[in-house]
Each structure stands twice: as C-alpha cells, then as structure tokens.
Length: 535
Ligand code: G4P
Image (cartoon, rainbow, N blue to C red; front, side, top):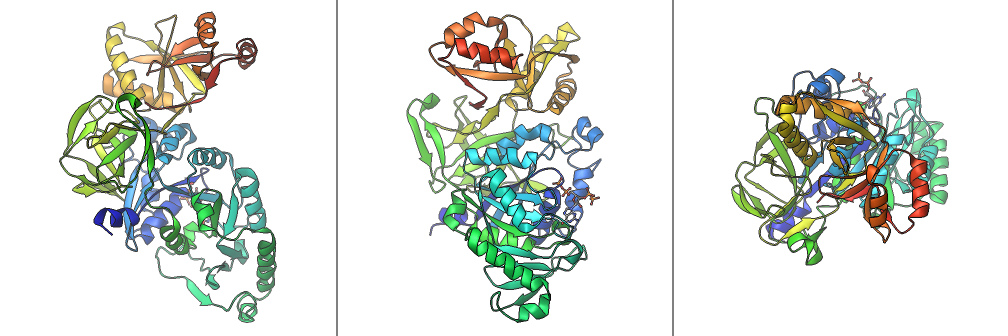
C-alpha cells in the first residue's frame, strides 16, 4: 500500500443529520469527547449557545440564538482520521446543509426515540438519497420513555424507505432502561444513568447468546422480552449486510442515550470499521465540460478538490471569507499551485486552513476526504473545482428552487453599484439566490428559508455598506426552464413571470400554482426543474 492508499483508507468524512432537538449537538460533542478532541463535556453545547465564541459573527445569529454557520471538526480515533462536518441546526439554512451533504461519504442519522421520524429527517433523507449516501442510525434518548423499538424501525422503514438492521437492541426504556444487547457480539452493555462526563467503559457482560440462562439472572423479566424481540427480528428484520449499507439500501441501527454517553462507543467503533472511506466522484472533463465526464478516484495522484461551501466572517477580527474545499483526489501540500478552472487561472494555495475540533491551523498537507479552508477574495464560487492540471468540474452540488421571495428596495440610489456587487457575491456564496426579471430592473431574492433574507440584508449593510430594505412580492416558487420544444414560446408568451438567475439560466416565477398547471397543459413539451447544478 502506498501512502496515498493508506491515507485514503483511514479517512472517514461524514455529517450528522437530524430533526432539531433529536440530539445532534449532544452526539457531536460525545463523539469529540470519545475521539479525544475535546476534554470537557459541555464545550460544543456552550458554543451552540454562546454569545461570544466563533459563532458570533452575525448579529442575526446572536439575536436569535441559533447557529447559522457550520464548520468542520477533525479528530483522530483508533488510527482513523475523522472529518465531521457540522450542519446548521436551523431549517431555514437547509440549503447549506444540503451542500454540506454533497461533501461527505456517509452520514449518521439521529432519531429521538419518543418522536421517531420527523419532517426534517425526511427532507434530509431525500437529499442523501440523491447521492446514495450510506446512513448509520442512532436512536437517542432511551433513558426516556419512547416508542417501542420495533415500532421505531417500522417508522424508519416506512417513512424513509430504507431497511433497518439493528446491531444493538435496547433492554427496557425510560426509568426501566437497563442497557443494550449487542446482537453481533452477544454482549450485554449495562446503562449507568449518571450523565457522567467521562468516557470510561460501560459495564459489559459477555453472554453465550440469547438463550444463555445468565441473561435471566442479569435482566429478570426483561430477558424474556429481549428474546421475544430477537425472535421477531429474526423473522421480520433484516440481517446486517455491509454491501447493502454501502449502497444506501440498509441502515445499521444503534440505540443509546447521547447525554449519558451511552451507546457512543459501539457506534463510533462500528462507524470507523464499516463507514466508507473517501469515494470516487464524477466530474465533467475538458473546458466547460466539453469533453464528457469521468469518475475521479481518490487514489489518483494528482490533486483535485471542489468547493461546497463558503462562509463569511468566521473570524470577526478579520472579516474573512473562507471557501471550504473537499479534497477528492491526490495529495495536497502547502504552497501548491493549482488551477481554478472556472476562471482559468493558476493560483497558489499558501494559507489553507484545516479545522480541528476547536481550532484552526495552517495546513502542511492534506488527503482525499479532508476539508481545507481557502481564503476567498470574492473569486471563488460554490461548485468551483481546483486541480493540478486536467480541466475538471465536479458535479452534483445542487441548488434548490427557492420557496420565499422578496424584492430589494435600495434606499440610497448612489449605492446601486455596491448593491449589485454585494448581491452577486452573496449569491455566489450561496447565502441567497438572486433573480433578474426580464421586464424590470428589480433584484428579486429567493431563499429556501426566510432567515436567509435577514442574513443577506445584515451582510449587505455590514460588508458592502448598502442601506436597503425588502418589499414583499407575490411569488411562491420558481422553476428552471431547461428544455423542450415549447420552451421558447413559453418564455415569449409569459415574459412577465420570467427571470434569469446568476448563471443566466431562465426561470419561471410561480405566483399561482394553478396557473402554472394550466400553462403546462398548453405548453406540454417543456422541461421545468426545481433543482439545478451549481456551475
Ligand atoms: P439538536 O442539536 O439535535 O438540536 O439537539 P441537542 O443535542 O441540542 O439536544 C436537544 C435536547 O435533548 C437537549 O436538551 C439535550 O440535553 C437533550 N438530549 C440529548 N440527548 C439526550 C439523551 O440521550 N437523553 C435525554 N433525556 N435528553 C437528551 P435541552 O433541554 O434542550 O438542552 P439542555 O438544557 O439540556 O442543554
């Protein structure tokens, strides 16, 4: 094995997805604790609620007590290099989350045992499905009364359309929660309800399978329930199949209680053992994708990477903007000259940053699966590819049709240039989408979640010194017009509702869904889309 193969094999790049309040922050913190990246429980939580730490870059964030930004936490565990990509908890920033999900090789899904599958879990799952991202599931809060474990699995299978393969099984719940039975190792792991802030090993007892009479001594009546559940599972459940997990057809399921550090060790051990290392990725080749597409393997020696996120003002002292680049192939070295393909320029990456759990440091070298932060002076756009020489453009970073719209009203007409520049850059960073109607000179902003508007306005003021406001507008959706024989005529006949986006792509702005339906009956040879690629 050469060094590149070795470095790729030991990397795991993933994100945690969940509906708010299921326990994503708590689990993140516990993973970092077990990974030795932090030594104090409460550290991540403190950050989440902080009024002064890294997340205070935006007034909006402070006022609302939410974390808008997301970042990367790198830590080592059992010889593996783990990159945990954080995603914004607030659903108004789900577009950002979707983009982060394009940069991971697998995800960990957290489900609240009392609530089961929730709305946001479903939406995030749909995004994972677009790329067949493997998913491991952690059912949390077993220390509270929740739904029956079998029902929870059924809920996941029915509502998320993925097979469940439980690897542990809970014994009791709530006040009667005794622990979990490790179905693969035939181990009983006892729950110690103490909210302990340490990672000391759980009390583990090995038994000789579920028929072992020792179980009755250890669990009393719960032993029979456990056997009953196991029988049910043997009949109706799915045995774990690594290939099906990697193909995103099956999710291994763990039960535990994040706040009590319970179930984390098995989860993390299994995660590093089974989760996929950095994966190959499809790219368009040749200038402007003219030569076709090919699969780029992480094991190719030439460096390549793609920008999936741009974050502004992470450090309020510097007002900097960082482009997050996921390395797809080869080896990155400090000072490397790489080609920025969209603008056709060679650039030297001298001051890239790597994000540790609570710190960021200069990168000397990095490998596929790693995320490096590159300073962006307004030239980098989401979806941009950097590589050593071959013209490449990685695909698969989606832009979603907004569901909320506002018209921008500039208060000081002398600042029109700055407004244009600011909106363009904020749009390129993915903070908001900007549309120009065909028939007016307005700027229409589109967002997946309305808080994006607040962030945009605050940043226009802060960074571009533009005093502007919003006017409501009667638009509830947008469809990119991507083809069909009737497209030209459709655009000509409906000019009032047509606009272009930042790339010059044409969209139909929906103010009345019924009207759109009727139009589609008239112009039936037309392709309208709600998702498009960043380019
Ligand atoms: P999120 O990031 O997914 O939004 O969830 P977060 O970790 O913030 O957890 C949401 C709430 O659930 C928190 O309570 C947290 O303490 C609690 N929680 C997390 N894991 C467990 C668990 O295993 N058992 C129980 N019983 N609760 C759990 P909170 O009251 O909102 O916050 P806090 O006051 O505890 O910090």
